[in-house]
Amino acid sequence: MVRLAYVQLAGCCGCLVSLADTYERLLDILDEVELVYCQTLMDEREIPECDVAVVEGAVCLNHEECVEVARGLEEKADTIVALGACAATGNFMRYSRGNEQSAPTHEAFVPLTEVVDVDYAIPGCPPAPEAIERFLTLLLEGKTDLLEPFAKLAEGKTEYCGCDLMYHVVNKNMCMGCGTCAAACPTRAIEIVDGRPVVNEDRCIKCGACFTQCPRTIWPGDDAIKELVMGGEEE
Amino acid sequence: MSELKEIMVKGDEGLLGEHLGVFTARSTERRILRVTQDGGIVSSIMVYGLEEGKFDGVIAAVADPDDPEEPWKPRPVVITDPDEVLEAAGTKYTYCPNVSVLKEAVRSHGCERVAMVGTPCQVRAVRKAQLLPVGMRHVPDKIELLIGIICMENFPYEGLKTMVEQLCGVWMREVAKMDIGKGKFWVYTDDGEVKSIPIDETHPFEGEPCHVCTDYCAELSDLTAGSVGSPDGWSTVIVRTEKALELLEEMVEQGLLEVKSIEEVKPGLGLVEKLAQAKKNKNQKEIEERKELGLPEPGKVHEQL
Image (cartoon, rainbow over all chains, first blue to last red; front, side, top):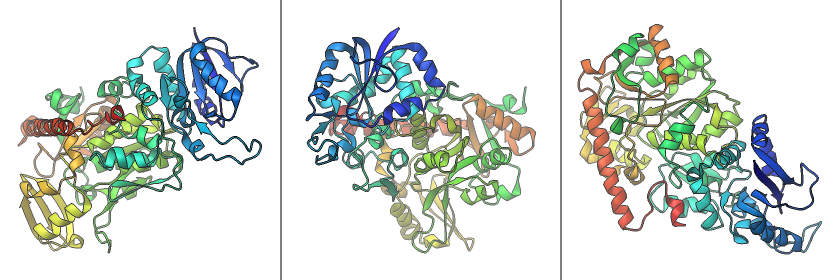
């Protein structure tokens, strides 16, 4: 059985809540793994050696233990998954500038992808429960070819924001105005005007959901959709 | 065997996408045919689905021809009342971000069985949202039916306006209906006038991002409808999933749809296949040309970051 550690760094626990929000399907997932570490759910102080480390939260460079835990993951886990935008792409931790209680000196936060070699990064704040479920199911089934987009996101750039829609979709003559980015945005920062996205940068939290959800940036392949969506699994 | 199964035929799946069968159809209801683009298939399905409780919300595009600022500019709506479906009838030849209200349909309107009509690219967007729903919490299993429309390309609003006002010489607010068929772009006015321009003259106004799309028939829909291949007032229907087939069979049994074999009508399925091939060839060439310029391929933008 796959030994899975759920590691929480500088995060809000929202990604774990999202995982739990798969309701009874969470039990199916837990049937398939041996949960060996999870601060919120179990009394286990040290991260043991494991097959998969699912990591939530950013790395606080001002916090020695946080950096040590992050750095130690490469030795402890065969596969490292940055779950959620704080670990994957920085998210609103990018706006941190310290001077906040209860730790006024904590101001430097970076995503896990900047600190260690991460195998898969899943943006979103939080990633939807169904996305986490899909990811873990594919990972446990060994269908890693379908996880290639998440692997690419882990090795590419580590900062995302609504501007990516302009730089990498609209500026590249790729946007056909479907509106997916607007639906995916958790803060309603995106409005579609004249068939193209307009991003309210004051509302953007840099979660990367818009860029990741866009059908023109990452296409998983027609076959995967026919097999896993239209094959009746969702119906 | 049902009447529908008896008349359905199969076409080239490499061009039309995988399907169970194709036929031609039109609504039998006057109230629908009066406002609809072709055979009223999409409107009929949406009215039937809402009335029968098969859907509790449908996403469609509504345009106000009398809007003082931007007549005919569509906006996406979530419709929960079957009486409101017909307000969304008819094709609008410009962008309408239907997918933008998908999460709203589920989260704000509380819909659990959503039907959406969309262009091939929009159907693709929703399918991806079902497979990898990173920002689509609780959306994937709420999609009951995806209706695709056959689509060669779309036009930005100002492009459409130029075609209508400059080339056809009709004010947007005077337009009763727009159509593309028989090699022409047609404008019907409120006064009963009919203007048209050759389709070639519309090419400069096509949205450029449409030119990297090789999906003509919304290949990932549950069913696809469009005028191409069928006579005036009829629609070609491509059925892809069992769920869509059952729904259509019910509608035929209840006399809501009149159906015919597409082999009995002109111009027939061959034209759909021919145009699908043309779109695939033309746009695949465009993708290759863009690659030479260093531009990303659709669906592979993340690989260049």
